[in-house]
Image (cartoon, helix red, strand yellow):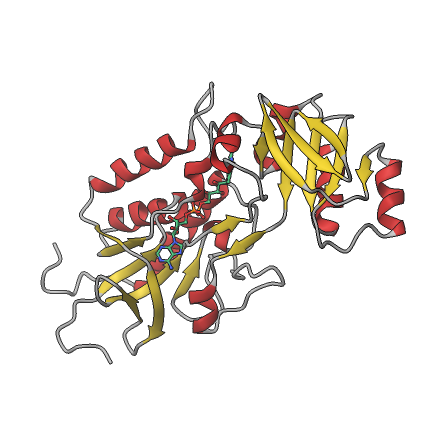
Length: 308
Ligand SMILES: Cc1cc2nc3c(=O)[nH]c(=O)nc-3n(C[C@H](O)[C@H](O)[C@H](O)COP(=O)(O)OP(=O)(O)OC[C@H]3O[C@@H](n4cnc5c(N)ncnc54)[C@H](O)[C@@H]3O)c2cc1C
């Protein structure tokens, strides 16, 4: 139940990565009251240097993009709450969120909660990402591995698709299998062979960094790669949307329409948590579309006594 005098914002944005920050900036500039709730685990912080974010000729570290968007948001009267949203429920006015900082209510809600990559079992994952010996996203950085010895580490068919994708960038690709995976089907082996991709049937026993390279141990053999793409998959943070009844696809991505509306009235989703390419430009673009749709849906407020 909503408390009698509990304030209600026009919009609550859950997630403070590029999607959530961009949406909050748009909504604030539309003169909407906004609360942004963020648990502070944005994927963007793991990007050592992005070379496909618009406007930066030499590329830019992900943390710097996040800092600039945060600074831009702070110039508007947006309430920022640094906490985790545990649950959300529908109310007659919109949505009510349960957090450790108390309840937060909004007439509309945008989910920008992102995804988390499943890491490989190896020491010092963060440092390996920083050095570019470990990578998660060929769309982001395959250009940086052109002509290099590239490994792909996977536990299922996604690894075959990722290895074939990367073959466009290097002729030296090896697919490594994680422990407990299903193994390669005959059809997958022939696709790999056709593309000139090597594979190891013996599952990997250990992965570790070796200087500026990565070393994989499998059945007593050691293989060195310049870089290893981990294709173990990801966890989509769509639980809040699912609990509210939003439709998701087989991977768990929240399904949205062209305006980034979900199947739940008043609930929108943008960025990695929603269907589409997991990229900063897509996250900020989707956030702009969602924020504009939310503003339109909230309607004009010039009849309100305080409006000027
Ligand atoms: C190693 C690496 C390299 C990459 N390189 C590039 C690149 O070069 N170019 C590019 O375009 N993209 C790149 N990406 C992808 C890019 O980081 C993501 O597409 C982008 O960060 C998605 O933004 P987002 O706002 O949707 O999600 P995120 O940035 O992940 O932000 C989601 C936020 O929501 C918060 N959150 C989640 N659940 C809750 C909750 N219940 N309550 C409160 N807060 C919550 C999280 O803590 C987090 O702060 C890379 C990713 C990785 C991991």
